[in-house]
Image 1 (spheres, rainbow, N blue to C red):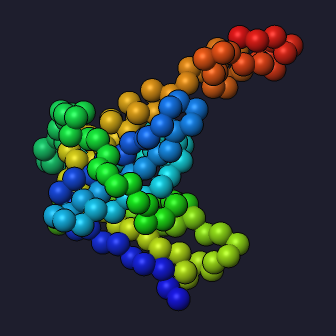
Image 2: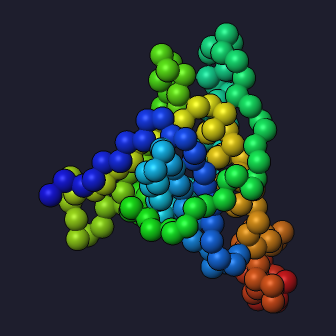
Image 3: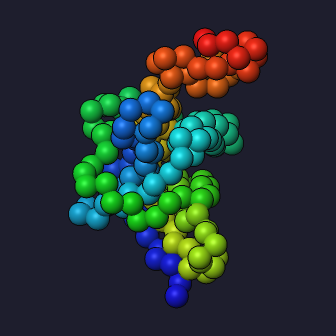
Length: 175
């Protein structure tokens, strides 16, 4: 049976966020079009790479098309909160970005993580079409959420718990 395909074109809202305490957070990408809300479960790295990728994509787009007005940097963090209930449609395996010049919309394409119990054809997908400003707001907010995690050890670059951690670069001494 083929997977479900979600198409929100255009979205009225798009965000990335996390729930839980640092070190135990669950990350999501969420989009809304009118009454339809699609929530995707993802990894912290997805949110971070997506945020950086959107910023780079927008920069390249502006360089190739200087006639386009710039995407707004302004957004209200309170408006970026995830909507309850958080019922993910699927767990993200792959993300991609595209651009529709005719409609001046970016598209975020998400593909479900394929497990041993399923075939590639059974994987669900989602396409969220958003303005450049909506995508930039999601990117900036998502990167802020990622930074709210555990501090990084300056020696080994691994996350540290509030109690510290056993740092391999410190011969097992706690940091």
